[in-house]
Image (cartoon, rainbow, N blue to C red):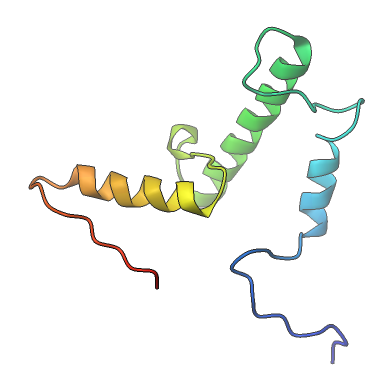
Length: 102
């Protein structure tokens, strides 16, 4: 039996898998691709962009999607808005989008 505590609040955060930690270390520090991936004007930005695109391709392969279908967001609110507005805009008939705090 494990001596680790039971933790059920994964809504805001989760433990990080060791493989993820190793991959993230590659993007931290001066010897890594720490640049802003939106900045193409310097090598650090281009290197970071390549790392982001490589990750996008890996996630796409994992879930059976194309890289163009993978969208990174900054958090839950942006993700929810993207999903809900995308569904609403895809509907043929105009209507209302109603949400709750639940």
